[in-house]
Length: 395
Ligand code: PLP
Image (cartoon, rainbow, N blue to C red; front, side, top):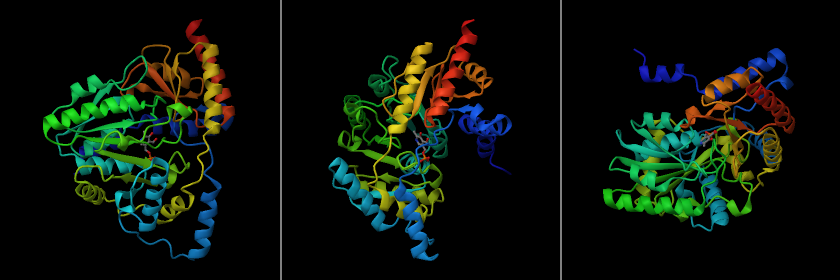
């Protein structure tokens, strides 16, 4: 008999992927340039040249011998290179032993939740948040407790998060720069959360882990709002990183989990991560892309095209009159829907071939997410559609 939980998950479409699939179909019908698909976070900036150059070189040099398994946590020299890169950038003292290479932040999160949570426990997420957290928590037999961010500045509401912590709280998961809002939690905001978590860990007699999901770490637009290095603020932090966005490699599935030495009993936590990977059937991350990220680890992240789109988008929305959250990072614009039901608003936009995602799945109602990881022309065309929709609502 099939597993009902799995069937239900498989049958219930993920709204983002469903809209993306619709967009592809619609483009085939009416032409690529007539559909303004802002639904998915697929980076539009090409990967650094180093990526293709390394693939070509590896393919030539290896003559078919590079496709074998690697050790489960990843190739030792690749892990060491990642550690050295982090040490240089964040003034740390990590080694390859702190790192477990994975197939995307998705697997980093799923593995870590499996590793550090017992069935029946809870993970707190400031909402809005990345919707798949619920699925991975569910697989670990756990649930996500949503705590809305402050409505005025979309920073974490630390007193409310502290009030939500109880003896079943295994972890808090944060994502900054944030999908879907584009906000960055300030250093002070994270430090306040860390204080609250220390208080509650002590009260309940076990560590509450802080999972820092940060695939957008390098995508910030104001130097003075650069994302803080979270393990500096809270010892029991586990970092979940991915090159999906920074190196535009989402289809190649390459990422890592960092368990710093500051984590209590970090060797055990690291072993649990390895076991979590094993339980979930992750044998090792793709061999070729482990080597690619090693070779390209210092390649600069090109965020300028996103910043250009961001500015054009904000200016256009201002002119029309939409309310939105000014993005500090990532590549999403969080826009207030023109009616309380964001799904109804999304449908109205869809009729204009403007494809957006309603905020409901992210744990908040009344907003939509629009990815500006697309061409400048797509943003310019989309603004024309936003105007048409605005006019329709205001006639
Ligand atoms: N976490 C957040 C906040 C994301 O936005 C995404 C992808 O969009 C992921 C995790 C998953 O990333 P990956 O493609 O590396 O699995």
